[in-house]
Length: 314
Image (cartoon, rainbow, N blue to C red):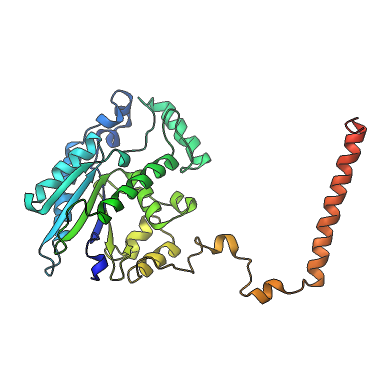
């Protein structure tokens, strides 16, 4: 690994909480505040198993025996309980620390949720669009995006200023224990996915782990740890998967010109050279422009006549 990458975490791992009472029966939200929803017995077991998988993953490189982990966790009871069970797989010397982070909490759906009203509201959301729809008295995914963006800025400051007091000889791993939509928004922000791409993503399962791993060039990719089949099942398009594969060997700060959502979606009609751009218009193009000009004039004349008829012009 290059010297400038030594303080970067080897992995940034997103973990959704284990099965909750609300996942099992949405009626729980009618009497219990969302942040107080607990894990089920099955959810506790899922979290323990997630901890074992995390430990196996992080300790899998024999050339990096001095690995460490730092946890960020949503303040909701179900995420805190998930982290507590995950922690059973780690010794104290391996954990640098943990931070409860309010900005990675669940999307706010309002206060106590009335079951029938929430069912109808979610149908409206599907018509309106999952990203921009704001729940009454709650948030939209766009609101979650804003606070996750703020969290990411803080995370980078922690790294740049070495606030975690990282020993360069240690392989660092960040584990973020959060919620389904928040995790999807995190990936959207990190990889600069569009709203349309976000709308196609599927929610992770309970205690599911999604691993962003640092490539040799200093960029992060989902394609190092996860297979193409997994990425497809998550809802990534072929173009998004190709981008993840490119990131495996991409250099930090490098730009992938052929990602259509970076450029082509907006400027697919542009010429390749200044000479083509400055070329004289063809006869057909001139006729098209002239036709549009005539239509505009005709429309303007019509509006003037209408104003005169209505006594609006003196």
